[in-house]
Image 1 (cartoon, rainbow, N blue to C red):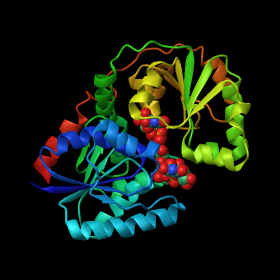
Image 2: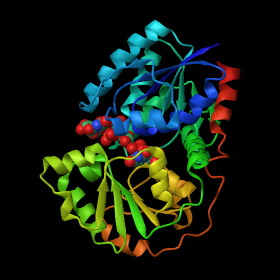
Image 3: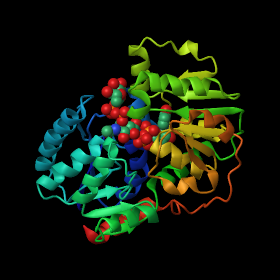
Length: 346
Ligand code: UD1
Ligand code: UDP
């Protein structure tokens, strides 16, 4: 069996990896390396337990630092593992510092890189994720794009070899979740919110402005709070009780987050993954960003961008979206397609 080392480290990567691991482990010797970018039980362990993901062979326990230091520590530790394991390829997901570190470590010692969720672009280079994506795509030998737009983005940058539009592995993850939790959860008169991007959180005034607007909505807001966001509120002495209309809860498991989305009338978020899930679940989304890499979700009012103009959220809650494309993110068989291609190529 050929050997693939998989580098994961942040919450959305555990969720993306679950269906891919299920499929790839039938054909490859799959070795997982957990960088430790996310380490709280509710940001890491919970996903391994719930989704039945294999315990990583390597726990690098890098933890939280500035971007440069965190990426550098990961790079050093991943290189050590790769020198020892000598895999035939290294697989990375998405756009986090763990993604870039994995791709760079492999590239430096001439191991081919497989990038899943390749070709996404927000065209906003102030986002650390945008730099991570561009660099990772340029370091990769096999690029799995989730959408036609992503494939076109790569082609526009001159990346045309070994690009495969296989649909989105998060659609596979969602089907996995639905098979466990069912499809007919009753909608409640509530809104689900998640906010964690640095440009919405690092400046406490900005974060308070967002919370003020959420607090003034007519429907109750359920808000599983990311540790970055709770950390900033805490260090600024902000009491969550001040926002009576917002039900702040700890980060929840993946199945619980899907349940909460199904039960909500609308999703308000700045998360990449949650925007897509809202679309797949046919829930209207309001994205607190000035642009999105998931541009297809904006069609027909399913997703709406709001940034400076937070006052628009109220009116957007009344907008009824138009036609929906069920095949936007593929057929829910991305993991199988990825596996088939890799069997042939590696
Ligand atoms: C990271 C990714 C982002 C992704 C998000 C998913 C980068 C550059 N950013 O952002 O693209 O959308 O993960 O959730 O890779 N913290 C804890 N416990 C944890 C993890 C983090 O308390 O288990 C706190 C620490 O104070 C840390 C902060 O959260 O400094 C931010 O964590 P970090 O992983 O650096 O960035 P995220 O905002 O999570
Ligand atoms: N998610 C979760 N629990 C939460 C919040 C989010 O399981 O409390 C899931 C969500 O369903 C999606 C993924 O985490 O699958 C998105 O991760 P996140 O928003 O942290 O990162 P992004 O997608 O923006 O990189």
